[in-house]
Image (cartoon, rainbow, N blue to C red; front, top):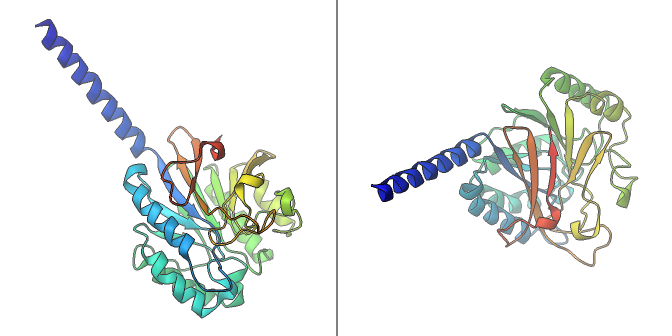
Length: 286
């Protein structure tokens, strides 16, 4: 009888642990973020293809719900690069939510939107270069630049109004490049419009800025930091590294887990390795 009671107690504890784990997973928003590609001189995307394969493998294990793209997929916005990237991105099992980068402005927003929807094959509809994904615990505001990697007054006004509309819900901004001065490795490159700081980032519900553009090699730079209460997360480029130099390229992507209690865990994966790299984990609270 005592043995049976112990067995039943163990079973109850096990079931409770499983239930708690399931509930925790259900309360967590998890997504991957892919960085710049724009390969040259050839329109080939082997590292992006590997990242897509990795994300597909990790999706059931991590309960990933979608994938973001921070821009600069097609070098100079050429039709060839868009076409070559298409089967790679169509292999994603999850909806893909990209924005434009400065490279896509080698062509037009219309071309970008056409291919963004081809990449999704009905899994998601991208009908604007600026849009918002809203969830229970957070909103993701995705804003393509208006030209190059910068915003004009219209873009700043949209961002200001959107962040204000969402308040007090925490907001993560997804932009191609952060504002100038954030990443010291190339402080002159980035958003220069003063309204990005004074009108958008000044709003108290902005919690993080997710960006790419700089093609930084994460082992050799400061890739994640907090300034003025806002967290800046760099997404490394998949096909080419530029900073601090081009001598070493380590293709990586990042995965965000936003838990129900407001804890955000950002993991970094090296292509081909399905275990996150502990040295690059970053945490903050919404």
